[in-house]
Length: 496
Image (cartoon, rainbow, N blue to C red):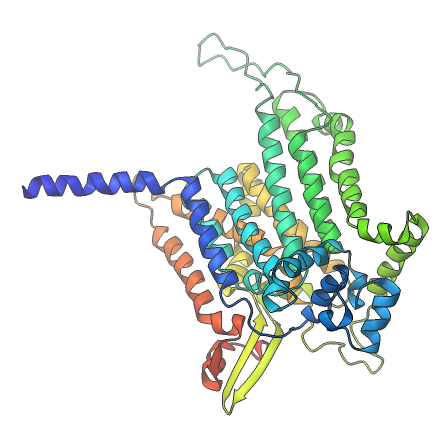
């Protein structure tokens, strides 16, 4: 009897493992986790914090509600409503503000109403990153790990719980790259592989190089067109989304060159430019441009097809951003929480969104800060991923490295004032770089052995990352902390 029970236990475990070891189970699990941490007590604080002061009111104005409902009461706010039909946030495109407006339309103009769209976008972007991991690695365990790490990435969580624009940019960029990967799979399934010439079965006779093989070159590819729509929506939410378009164009041309090279075609890069240039321009430049213009549909409805006026608006927006200075006339920083892009991976200066002191020695704060395990881990993981791309010619490593570096590097050239939360669209790809490195470490074996010595480290890293998120949860959500408890979480002077 005992033997039967002993045999039944492993069999039951194996059946359970087969049930849960599926991509759909991984996606559902991370979706539930992501939604829980983003929607829990979403209505707190019960007032506008940080830049919600602009975007939540802009959304309300877009809906046509009166000044009292939108809390538009200052002279400045009334001026911009009269002149631009917006608040001071007119310097950003309208799609993100319209997305916030959908939440206000569905749930009233209150804290939950103006934040719910961000929570939905943050949750969907976690699912999209898990989908990226599934396409890249093909194993549910890494699908789950990628989704779990982003679901508990502190900066992404905070931006998913406030009515600001960056989480929408992040969501659209991640969806864009997910669609781009689907496009790669779609075209590869239609591309014949170039098999080497037979060598007569004699191992002493070298194989003849493969015959050149033609490759399909459709101009309009459905997944690539859809990716263009997503990248256009990113730019229509905030101009910083343009970095996603640049990376997408680069990846598309790299992949098309490789596809022709593997088919044995001569001059693969030149042939890729000739054959794919028009399709790439249409899908990843013209389609995003059309989406961007379409995001101003309400503006055109109000002003008529005034293309000159619209171009003047775009010029005014550009002039505003170009004219921003880091310091004021007296040489002092214009904001106490500025941080240069080179400092973002090191989390030198998080941004204080909210502070309340309900009693002596008690505080409630919300800091936009990254998860140290992911941001600091990515300082090693991104170069390691780039190295594996160079050494192994692994296109998956190339995808992750190019996305992470391509979205980050342009910020190093920007002179306007910068904040850590601008890194929100980059954080999903820092997660993917960490997952790629963890996967590689987990598969390393000692020579001549089945042992995987780094597997405990991989498990420990995931546990540490989630543990740090839980530890910092109170300072991400405005939880009640004593001054001593806060000091335990303020590791560096820049974190206060």
